[in-house]
Image (spheres, rainbow, N blue to C red):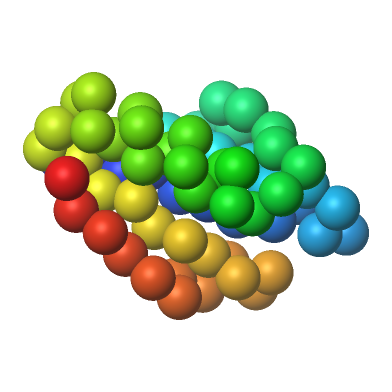
Length: 65
């Protein structure tokens, strides 16, 4: 199962979507845009999951597709 993570950048001015905790796939200006993109990617690569992280990189929400 592939894991997509959504996490803020260092100063929380943008949000990264990463696949399997490697280099960021994309950076988005809003958290909502990043979550939508990650969910779309996960749905295309089902079974997958999306983990939404806080600024300390702790999981605050997880969804499976």
